[in-house]
Structure formats: C-alpha cells, structure tokens
Length: 317
Image (cartoon, rainbow, N blue to C red; front, side):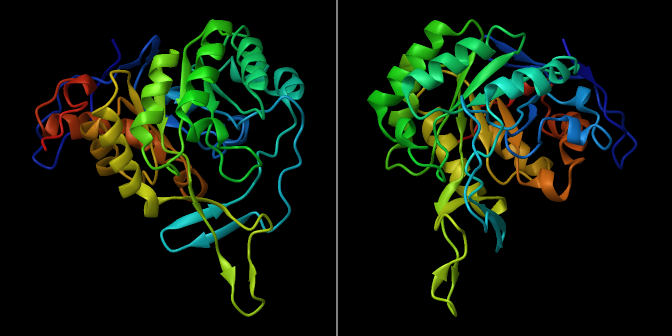
C-alpha cells in the first residue's frame, strides 16, 4: 500500500496515514494524480522542475502511426478561464517515439500510460499492440481529439467506440483506457459501449469543441477554424460528464478538465472519478501535480477518509 503522511494542520494535529493508492481495472496506481497527454511533453522536459516519481502516472504526448506536422497557426488562443488549442496531434510518429522517448520514459519510477490516436480502427489496434509490448503500464485510446480530421469519429458513435476498444483490448496485453469526448448528446452511452468493449477505464473529458474570432478581420483566429477548449472553464462540464457516466458504468473513471487545486481533485473523486489528470495547469504551474499529491492526505482526513477508495463515488444526490 502507498501510505502518505501530510504536514500538520493549522491546529497542529498530525494527519493520520492515508492510503493514496487507487485501481483502474487492471491498472494499479500509487496515487490518483496523473498528468494528461499533450500537456507534459515526453516528461523529459519537466525533469528539472517536477519530481515525476511522486505522480500516480504520466501520459506523454499522443502518438500516431506516422509523423504529423499538426495544424497551421495560430494553434493556441487564451480565453476567459481557459485555453483554446488546435495543435493537430503534432508528433514524430510511433517509430521515433519508441526509439527516442520510450527508453527514457520506462526508466521513470512511475506508471507510464501511452496515448495513441489513429484514423482507422487498424491504426488504433496496431499502435496499442506495439506499444503494449514495450513495458508501459497501460494504453490510452485517444478517441476524442476535436482538432484533427476524423479525430472524434470513434468517440461519438457507440458502435464504433465498442469495436475499436474491443479490437485494441484483444491485441494489447496491458490495460486499455478510453478517452472520450464531451461533444456528444449522451456521453453515458458511449462510455457503456467502451465498457462492453473491454475498456479497463474511461477518461472524461477531452476538450470541448470551440472557436475564437477576430471580428476586425472577420476570420477565426485558429488556423484550423475550431479547436478544443480546456482549463477551468470546462470543469463544470467535466464534472457533469463524470456524474452521468458513474451512474451508467461499473468500470473506473479518470476525471479530466480544469483541475487547478486540491478542491477540484476532491470534487472529481467524490463525483465518481478514481483518478484525475492534470492538463492545462501544467502550462502555467508545472509543479501543481506534485503539490496535489502532498495535499491529498490532509484533504481526505478532513472528511475522515483513510483512503482514496473511501471517497470515490460518494456524491449524495
């Protein structure tokens, strides 16, 4: 068991040992604080400022079968309470990832979950099969990127979601996580399809489809026209999705969307998440994720919980 002892509270009362470990199906994590793909580079970039070994898990940048140059600029726009991006899954492809990045990643003393994306079911399956044999803890299927052609096709149709998850699960020896989009009418139906396909857990949510406009030029600001909104502005949407999915599936949920402090973490856990991913906050406060690990024992003790599992899905409605 992963035990943690927090610093004393204002009343100088010691915080009791708290079990921070959590399980996502077959995937066991030392604590529920992960970092989201696309916001933490390949971890090497953060090694001077973040003690990666303290994290529950690291998701490096999403990889595709072939190199992608991404979308035309502009690729990011700051918005009220958030960040709008249309990066377009810019990456060097799976071969370069396996040669240059994975050897470093697997030396880190934390679970590595590799995010993969494809244009076809075969793309997802081949990537999951390849990466799953190389010593990683799990594979996340990015079924929900809103700023690439076909990026959300598998996450908006329940049948397609089921089929790609089932095929990847059959081919991949490690746990499969399905990252879903909020840009659907009934996200619980998509999550149920992922569960029936064999996903070990679902990740909620990816970014919300949005746009920014330069009214003087009468043009969209992003080169792609539209992109994905992340950051604190989408947290209420993410919480709603976690709540709806927690009522519909039995598999664990990873909460994502606007997490910026320990209160946000606890809100997701109580609502139904078994772990969380820190995303946009990594850009402006890269040490947040490790501070949250330090703060979690005191937050759990505040509601008389002795473990993370004590609070998951305890929302009273």
